[in-house]
Length: 335
Length: 276
Image (cartoon, one colour):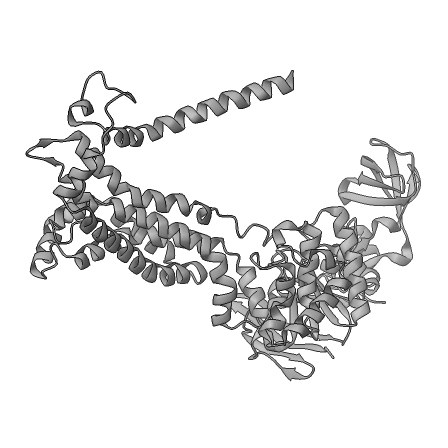
């Protein structure tokens, strides 16, 4: 079991409020991603759950038991650090087995569990090597091995893939997701990469300036963002925002349209007129950055190849069913 | 072409490195050579480099005239004792400054270092008087104390920089793994800090071994270490180059051997591979 509940969790460093009251219910076995810009408090929130920082207020419940006064190791959670944080003087075997050794397990039992974890992560040939003799991806796997061997109630991942190169990151992303599903252990994963969040999560927590902006499934966040911040943060390229007359006509202070929901027509059609400033041809997609005069820069995405170039005049027609409307205080207006 | 010029560059830089290495080592070599010459040959002009009358007579005279082992034992006790005490004080000090720094930590470190900027002779008179009052003149304990205090700022600085390099994440990982502070210290921190501790210890030993200002001024015979033993050969009776060289060779020999054997310990980079 690994149900984690936050009730009004607060954290301040002196006069600075980092976490301003977080309420969250994480179901057993789910994969939850904390995402947000740097400095939004996502790592702090994770460290509060881990017990590496003390809460200023509120409660953290693991399986219904308040753990705010419980030391990290007794919370039954294990953590994978951004820097891997392997013990440099210990072999892979020693690294993975350290937690079990501290728990006072018998040597043969430690060996059995370490070998099982190593087999899951394809680390068996490296068990007697030191961390310095491993590649980045292998080190990351050792860090994950150290986390799974203790059979915790939950995994905490603090941007674990950010030190890997792009190709390896994609591969490890899939491996981590598969491993979590296979073990069925609750996982909380911190990242600033919204693609990682969208692809890995069962549910995403979007944090901004110490506040939870929205908590929901990836598609919920994409289709029904609660406010301007979430709308702008989730989705790549970023949603286009238009204020002024176009918004007022639709009874909103701001309207948002995703680049993929703008229909691109040659000049002269209806919609928003503009000149292409930059055209990116990826083969699979075409991204147009259009200077739309008083509306500012708009981004449009076309699936497939579109032979338009910088300097061409186009008009962009928003799909009326997929226009997001926001009021003056940036909250979404629901019909 | 490219390969040829690379080889050329390697050859030139190798020759250059050997040349400068030899240049730096030359005074020591010259001292060792002079210790095997007769007094006359030792200051003959032009000097003979290898073709002179080799003799070990100087070493015998030096041992006969002044008790080498008495001075060597004093050096060992004074350098070893001051190093040990300095480490005992510096480890917790550097530890706390590295792992739970406050706003004033930087200031404290700078203040400690600033004490090294003052010339020791500036405080010679007060310290001499204090030592005289407390009966510490020409005592081993007095020298251990002054050398320990003198080197403490450098020892704390060195350890501080070593401890600073130990990533915090690793300590937190150990906490997540259920290590208590004691076990964290035994299984994680100490093994990672050993190269730093070893090189700090060695440097402090060398500094204390060669320290001449305080040892010459605060000791005469009873507690006098090898520095005093060397100095006694540049005396009012005249300068005895060969004997002075023999005494100096004998004085640096132990620390040279120690440095040679602990070279491996000094190699750092144990933390490499822990993070990133």
